[in-house]
Amino acid sequence: MSTFKLLETEAMFQARVQDYARLRGWEWMHLQRALNDRGYWRTPVVGTLGNGWPDLILVKGHRMIAAELKVGRGVVSPKQERVLGVLTGLGYVEVYVWRPEDWDLITEVLDR
Image (cartoon, rainbow, N blue to C red; front, side, top):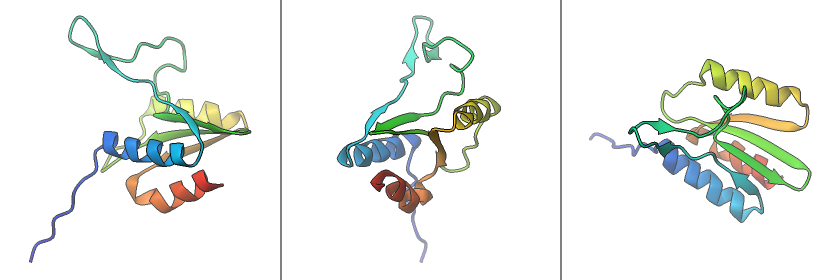
């Protein structure tokens, strides 16, 4: 008998993380891509940290989390690695790369 495994898209995974974070009292933000008038998808940000910004920034009390979300075989790009490194260097931002299979860790981090 074959088994069927539903693959969660990044959008589905992100919605699940956002919903759980909201339930646990976290504030969050996500920079949404938009279709421009030429038909290209763009995220309207400028600056040296604009390219590679993490998918989610979560804030609760004195804590700030930067989370890059990946599904399947998704890999962190060099620009994302650079931005995550800059944020890690601040010393007060918790930086994570989360995948659906990390759900137990995600809930543990957000429950603290």
